[in-house]
Image 1 (tube, helix red, strand yellow):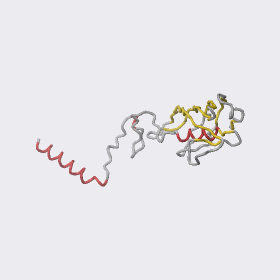
Image 2 (cartoon, rainbow, N blue to C red; image 1 turned 180 degrees about the horizontal axis):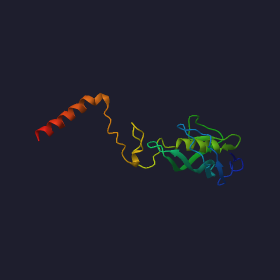
Image 3 (cartoon, rainbow, N blue to C red; image 1 turned 45 degrees about the vertical axis):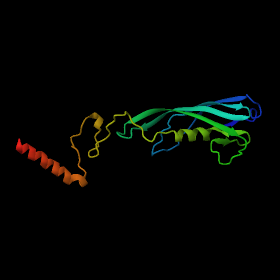
Image 4 (cartoon, rainbow, N blue to C red; image 1 turned 180 degrees about the vertical axis):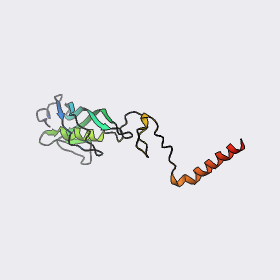
Length: 173
């Protein structure tokens, strides 16, 4: 959505509010498409003594999977966005100011970028999720699988020494 700001650019104290649904359903992240529901975008652009300030928020519910046990989960996501807008830049290296194009700003680009950057790298169904057994694949949240602990082949010699120590102690007793 392009927001036309030409009528507030030169009027100090003027503002323009916005509210719309952003569709990010085709965005693929980490092999999934978590934005199955629309992102509700709301906000306001204010002319504060000649500087245009955008303040907004994006809200949605992500549909993804737990990274440990692979159960489907939903995660609420609220992303606040604050940035300055300008018709021209004096400092070409300032990434915090967004340049207007013919007095308009592309809200889709601003809010889709903010949502993607705000995504957590890991989603869990609970903080104490035990995940899946690496040997048989059983969900360890539902109980143990009976596979026993697998010893790293590089440490197998040490495991034999520990077993020998425990056997020697059993024989002494």
